[in-house]
Length: 412
Image 1 (cartoon, rainbow, N blue to C red):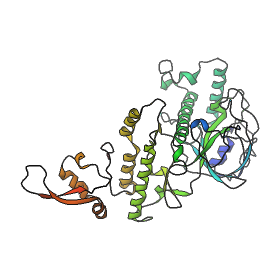
Image 2 (image 1 turned 180 degrees about the vertical axis):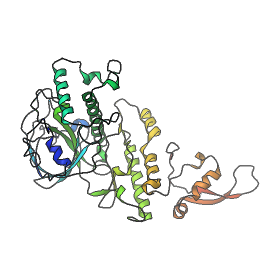
Image 3 (image 1 turned 45 degrees about the vertical axis):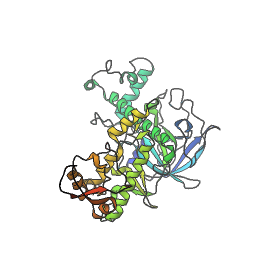
Image 4 (image 1 turned 180 degrees about the horizontal axis):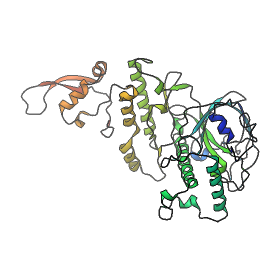
């Protein structure tokens, strides 16, 4: 394999849309930890399945991936289980690539499909602060050279110094390889947040969110030991494949009826409320592209937790509630579903309690902006007064008994 001129030929094949079919995965788990199956992990510490994808030569890169070497003590895989062979077929790459490379993969033994989501600093969105430095083989060579110098102590450890605002140099003086470390840190943080989110939301896996099966390491062949995680490993997740389509491809009143769009949008909001009720994760990346409707029943599934806000150990219920009230997913999603830019999925909005409206007139205007069938099922028109000493009675809208109201922090 020509590592210097094209060190990541496997990904070059993917980007060119080549037919990548047969791959080989090695998987193993210690006896007290679960092997890959359709069960969900009960906590982050129970996640045991570690998948290693590797390939040997340039010719085999597009067709076969196999285990050809172990990582030494400098690797992030230190202390991980030994692995067991598992043949797989890579079916396709999902486009467009965003922060991660997302592949649909099948197990050769039973054609069981699943998703492999690889967090690769070289592909997709790179550094959020400096996007003008694309990945190149030359940049990779500079990075590897810098890593070797850090490992032997020739230069200060940039992997530590980059987090120290006082000791690190100004950003305008950073070399390109230094920005590559920043890109890696940010993508790795997204990966770790998503991993934590799936583990914390284990009770919702297979329902509101995809099942999480395990983690992936994709080692990159190198002739410059000792290896380092930034240059020698691509990490990722294995997730349930949801047969369905993204909600963004539908247009209400064209692909789905307006009443059906209203039902779907209400289910989407209920799904976000269910996630919020777990009291540990906020999604934080709210757009309709992250909502998949299952083929069976068009129930919504929320994906992509790379930007999630995860409740830290020791965070009190009150402290976490402050986070939720300050930036809950539900109101943001409601705005998106009501936005004409996204084709207006949601036309009715759950009311606040009447006391949260400034005046009866404001409440009446809200009610009369809703659809007629929603008004009929949600409100009653009653004869009353605006204040105790009023002489005349007027018709006013009141919320029917038993109708759910939203809290005042759940504003649009």
